Amino acid sequence: MTRPIDRLLGIMARLRDPEHGCPWDRDQSFATIAPFTIEEAYEVADAIDHGDMAALRDELGDLLFQVVFHSRMAGEQGVFDFDDVATAIADKMVRRHPHVFGQPDGRDAAGQTEAWEETKARERAARSAADAGILDGIARTLPPMTRALKLQKRAARVGFDWSEAVTILDKLAEEAQEIADEIAADAPFDRLEDEMGDVLFVCVNLARKLDIDPERALRRANAKFERRFRHIESELRAAGRSPEVASLDEMESLWQAAKGLEKSGGAGGA
Image 1 (tube, rainbow, N blue to C red):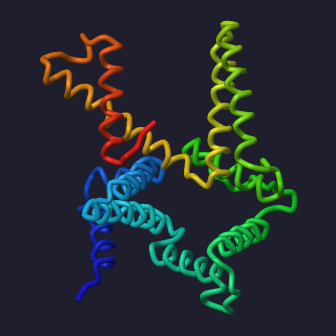
Image 2 (cartoon, rainbow, N blue to C red):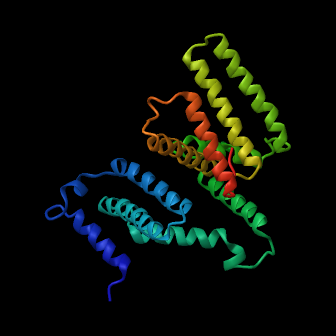
Image 3 (cartoon, rainbow, N blue to C red):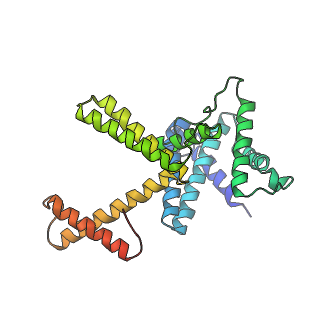
């Protein structure tokens, strides 16, 4: 009986076949497929956030197909194939889990996370030149918030960090005041953009110190905003009105009502 992964690899080979394949699939490259790979990863996260296991199964399949697609293109160039990808990640997992595949060391989850980062650091050092920096190897194509978090974590590993989360609030207030000053001074766009970036970077730092994933926190905030705004639309529609003709005060009142409904249902809200 054919294994599902072998069937998928065969389908991918057929899609890329120079004579009988799909014209669209044949025309793709690593660069053109990369945005789809990123999109599929986000859709996996979205399915998890919604607790939708059926969607998660499907989205994981879509993400796996992206791996198969990239591996097929690499195989056509004689660089590597899917088996090489699977072998490399299997070897890496064994190497980074010596407490499982070697001698147990008695560390708890936090200790294992620290050990994982130490192992990654040694691997980076082995691959890099002698003058490689602490921040080397963090992909520039990551979403900016995720990359900020990784940059901060790397710097924190060598002691460049805030002593405690509450002190970051002072820095956040300082950055907020700086952007307020720039607005008051009618500063050019690039200065406003720089100050806005500083505010966001500090917010990521605060989330990190509180052990909060800033991407997840923002996704939850987005969902909350969408939920409450849809409540505004629904209530206005029931009254034969729309947001376009409603006043700000009217919409704010409905927003507060939506918050009240969430709190009474135990969801809480900001």
